[in-house]
Length: 283
Image 1 (cartoon, one colour):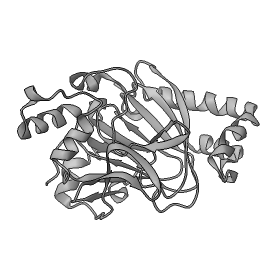
Image 2 (cartoon, helix red, strand yellow):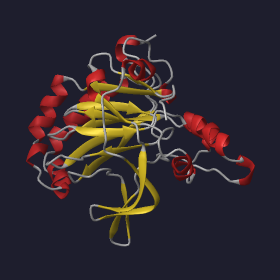
Image 3 (cartoon, rainbow, N blue to C red):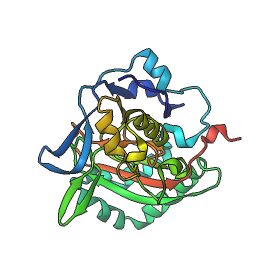
């Protein structure tokens, strides 16, 4: 199946073209993978990645165009050097296990205060309404094809490609849900896996395959219904290098992060809200 125009990727100061790849064979259903348990009806991307063609890049990447609609836009950026230096002083690279991360923050409260102040100043330039908040520090093990999981009855259950549900919404209102910034604080490159379709596009495509009056599509089941009908829709992989970040409407498109092939733990800091502008392109 060919790529359809949908979510656009921006990266004004980063050669984003060189950090993207695609697979033509889409996804596979899994209930377990490499000893990890997955939730029912979970899907993960196949691992046959290739470079995008010029036509696919033109369809996906908006390198020199204006960042206009945050609900359909994915932006790749890099934090400033002064904030990089503060995180370097924090010493997260010394953490060898996810459980080492929180104590590192706790032991350096004054430094963390400085980081928070500098991050708040930096992130504020991306939000015209100053509508955002700290969400969490995420931690994950290396060499995971996908990393999002829930801790249920003393076990980690992975979910594969998914949409976030940061607040209650319906399929046709997902675009109003805001977006998030996720900053890679790891020593290694992590990857973001995604399909470039908004939920409304997904809904309409499913409608081409089945009678929507006979099924009840919700944010809880739309992922599995779509991939059962369109398992070969292309998945994009975007590299997020250390101290790079992405802005993405994660309630509005299928995605997950991956640490596949990595050797070090994965650490990110995440903020949610409305990030609707680029600092150098304020109106």
